[in-house]
Length: 131
Image 1 (cartoon, one colour):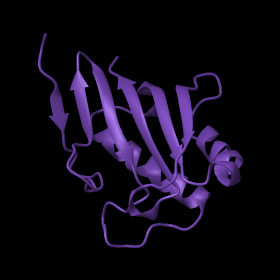
Image 2 (spheres, one colour; image 1 turned 90 degrees about the vertical axis):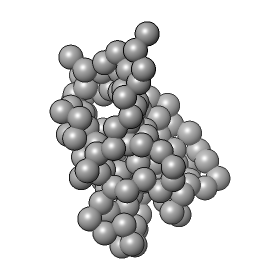
Image 3 (tube, helix red, strand yellow; image 1 turned 45 degrees about the vertical axis):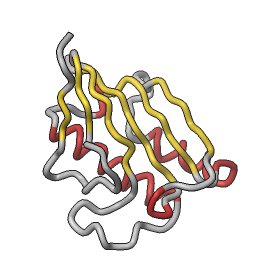
């Protein structure tokens, strides 16, 4: 069995901990959860509200995917973490839905958590597959 490749993507946000942006093995890519931080200015305050934070998280995930020659159409599974689940679930779904074709939605789990790094309201990780 081959060893995994560990990807650090130049244009993606600097990881907030000791991990890479993605790990790949046999065409499967496991993207580290992204936060609503700004790749060009990691010290800039994160956006306010679930809508803006979800959009920034997707921008960051797309940067990782693009750096690996992929896009959201390659995503097969998402795990979503919400710090204010009951309050934000409906609004999060509305924004999330706008990023995927209605006929090709990835499998998904959404989990309410007590807190996220950098005081974020949302974090999303993904699994993608190379064609």
